[in-house]
Amino acid sequence: MAADPSAPEAAAPANATGITPSTLQSALEDKLQAEKVFVEDISGGCGQSFEAVVISEVFEKKGSLARHRLVNGVLREEIKLIHAWSAKCYTPREWEDRGGKKG
Image 1 (spheres, helix red, strand yellow):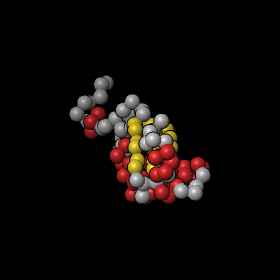
Image 2: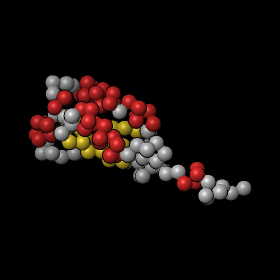
Image 3: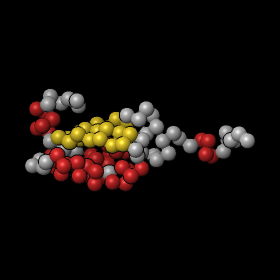
């Protein structure tokens, strides 16, 4: 028997978690006082895989692991709901030294 297209399940968005690049960006900006945050959905639209660049003073004098732990701690609940997450973390000076490039 075919599913009823008017049923609520059929109308559910492809990204049922409600997690979007903007929700991740807002959380990082608010909780890490980040100067800049770039978040991209790299899942092809299903909202299950994201990568980010986070520029924040709180990363000063912290190694890569400590920076990633801070970011992952902020997004602990969101990360539980998605398939893949990747972040690059820079201080404002490091970002400037890179020429402000994401790659």
